[in-house]
Image: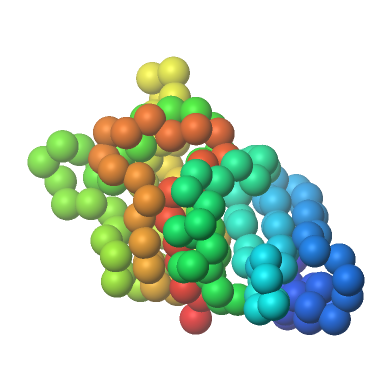
Length: 148
């Protein structure tokens, strides 16, 4: 699915009485949701690697940070989040960094396997919601990226 198709879905959602639209395609999951209250906005969630449920921690804070151009990178599995390739290395990304599709954002270790989580979009990291060496849950939001 390309960005033009996503924009078209967002416009259709805003004009309809539907509050939420969930779409699964290959190994990605897209959720478009109108915000509660009078203000109508949409957000997207893109699974990194595999489809994942829409579990969100601290929903109120995320709702404030999410805009039409914000992509949430979610954990595709339960595991340990690592921000860098090794303890003495610099993190893959930091808040404010510009990322490209395919760029490694972090590693999630699951059952002794190191899984690189890559960006599926181009944009700027606006928030990192997980601390280094913290356990992440399946479907947990790890990064917020403001699309270009």
